[in-house]
Image (cartoon, rainbow, N blue to C red; front, side, top):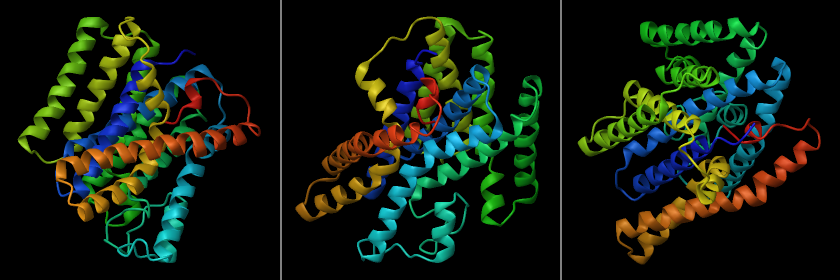
Length: 335
């Protein structure tokens, strides 16, 4: 299956948006809408998993093993580095306890003893808790015939969201898995089904979806509106649907740099905060203005992610691929 360049570009821009968000936040600035990169990632994840399951016969066990093999090793490595840094006193604000460490390593939502928030040790790893929840439900769908999978996922996700809206559970696990943002995975699945059936929007309408989504994100940022998954989720879905429509219409070509950043997006997402923190602290010591500090932090975070992609993610992928069946191009890329 050929590479979907539009999806690659969205992954690249989503990762960079998160990097800018964290760099601005650490410097005392604001780029809250950058967090919407996560919404785009969730929609893309649903899209890719559905396409993979349609193009390749997968057992639930093989699917889960593949996903854990793909997602967990790099995440575990960064988490262990964070734990080691905290024990060495490099992260004085990071408090550790056994429950938080185990929850962080095994993708179980728990409250951080440092802040009380439902965050793992590597804060941006909270999204991987959602990813693993999605993978478990998706694996459940793989037990069913193809025609029953989409109804099953729709009912399952809908059930969890209704539980969250009606009862507002207080436990970290239920509070996480009943958030409306889980519907973004389902949105990606629906977009993938439309794409597989060739029910796309065409060039003009696809461009309109992309433009409307980008204008919506820009308006949220310019108005200083609160981050709302009920708004950002549909905008992310419109953006992904527009991009795959343009791709289906032959309107998107290969841009090597963006394709590469899309490949490296998972490593950039995982590793960037280490470099961002160092860059912001160094900028404060050197008296570098806030704007330049953010630029330096974004560049540092992106470069560290690229280095980790080359020196950690790719070698791990090669090592683990020796123990697994050969995968198709789309499946080789992290979601």
